[in-house]
Structures are given as structure tokens and as C-alpha cells.
Length: 420
Image 1 (spheres, one colour):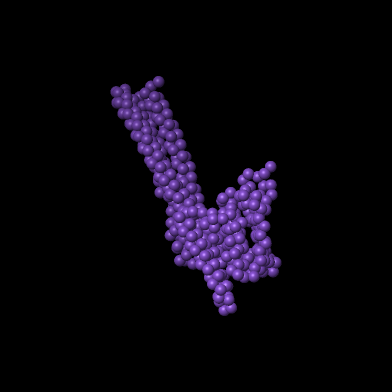
Image 2 (cartoon, rainbow, N blue to C red):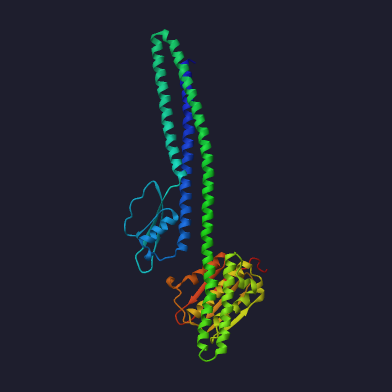
């Protein structure tokens, strides 16, 4: 085998190794770039959903100021258009979240959230371009070497004195190829170091995103607790004050009793606020059992008015509830009873707690004016909070109501250790 044949063989071998390594690196970089973009879009979507739950506003009221506020919070640009209007073309350098919404009584809307790709994704794209450039450069270099080798071989046939020069040139080219191989190995080691550093940066960014989502979820849950607990107690105190004002004209002693009860309720609300601030469980449920907490809430809401309640509790069923289920069930019951008196104008309310082999049921039924439960806009914050509280403990809540027929709220909680 002559020197030219060996040179061509070595060149082809190095070319195949170089092409395989480069194509493998480019494929890996493309997959990582797509994964990073998908993770960034999912993280921003979760953050956008959490922000919408806190800044709850109907889509028809989204003005430019509100859209800028949303964009500043999530670090992007928020735009909303009618579904039949063509949105501006997408910028390849940005990532997008699009969501269709059907507002009540208006045409469909399309929400688009645009935000820049994470730095790691842009770095991966740059690496892909560098890899393609190295591939083209290496191919051109090897082809040039083969071309010059053929020229030297042909000139050697006409002049034997040039064979020595040809061997020297071959050695020089082989040395260049070896240097190129060493350079490629060094660049591969540098890419590995950069990839490790990028992986650590991605893990740190993911941890920060998780902490942000947990913070947003905590704020949303605190808002639900304040609405279902503290606000209901303050509403009951307001009813007590109205009753005291009415009694002040005819019976000062009874009015004084109502004011004393009002002061007692305000002190209890202050204690509950302090407990929420320090992260403790609600004072009402810790101070007494489930049934006693319901009866105390009814006493607060009655405020001397002519109201009737029918209460029946299965003590064994209540004892089988977990602390989390008891807390959420109590808040659902408080909200349902308060809605019956405040919005439904009911004079008679029935509360039941019973169990079956695999679940426990809570029923709150009234004889109020009722409402159209099929209309989503009729479901206010209170009824929406019931659904979210039920979801936290794997329960379901069903609301049945029609105008003039009262309202039924049915909460079904699963037993974690059902009886056989």
C-alpha cells in the first residue's frame, strides 16, 4: 500500500469520525433546545394562570393598563384580540402562549402572551450554528488535503525527484490532521464543561420558578381562607349590630346583650386574624369540634332574628374525617349557611352530616329565593371557593338551585380508610 492510499484511507476515517461526532452533537443540541423551550413555555403558563387567579377580572374589562400590569408580573407582553382578527406574525426569537376565551355575551377572544426565550435556549442555538460551521470547515479542509494529494501523486509520475517532497508534504498534512483531531477533542471537552454549567443554571432557575409558584398558591389559599372565615364572621357581627340598633328603641337591656355578643365576635375575629398571620389553624375549629363550630357560626349569624335551623350530625362520620377534610368541610358549610341568609333571604336552613361505606356527605339546604345555577356568572367568589376547597381534599361539591325553589349544597368527601 503506497503513501497516497494510506493518506486517503486516514482522511476518510477521520472524516467519518468527525461527521459522526458533529451530527450527534447537533442532534443532542436540537433536542435540548426544544426541551428548554417547552419547559419555559409550561413554566410561564403556570405562572400566568396563577396570576390570573389573584388578579381576577373579566376579559371584557382587560384594558391596556391591565394588560401591561400582567406583562410586567410575568416578564412578557400580553395582548388580546377578537378571534376573527388576524394577530401580528410571531417573532422567531420569542416564545408564545395562546389561549382562546369565550366571554359572556360577546365574541370569542384570543389571548397571546409573548416572552423572550431563556438564555440557555439561545446559547444552545448558538452552539448548533458553531457545530455546523465546524462540520463545513472540517469537510472543506479534508477535501482540500485530498485534492492536493492527488496533484502531488500525478506530478510524482512525471518526475521521480519530487517523490521525496511528496512524502514530506504527506507527513505535514498528516501532522495537520492530527492537530485538527486534537483541537476537536479540546473543543469537545470545553462543550462538556459548558453543558455542566448550563445544567446547574437550569436547575437553579427551575427551583426559583417552583418557589414563585408556591408563593402564588399560598396567597390564593390565604385569600380563600379570609373570605370563608374572617369575612363571614364580620358579616355576622354586622347583623348583630343591626339587631342591636332595632332593639335600642324598645328594649335597652336586649340591645346591650346584642352589643356584648358583637364585641365577643369581634374579639374572636381578631384572634383568627392573628392565627392566620402566625400560620396556625383556624381558632374556631381548634377550640371546638365540627358540630360546635357550626352551631357557633349559626349563633353569630342569627343575631336575634327569627331564623330556624335543623341540624343533624353523625358523630362517627365526623370523627373519621382527617384534620384537612374537617377544616375544608367547615369552611364550605360556613359559606353555604352565610349565602343562604345573606343572598337567599332564607328563614329555615337544614344542615346534615352522614356517611356511607366509602364517603361522607355534607348537606346545606335552605328555603331562600334560589338562583339559576346553570349560569356561570351567578357563581361568585364564595361558590367558586367551595369548588377549590373540595378539590384540595379530593372531594366534590354540587350546587342545586332554581329561582324560587331554594338552594342545596352537597359536599361529598372520600374516606381515606373506608369500612369493609
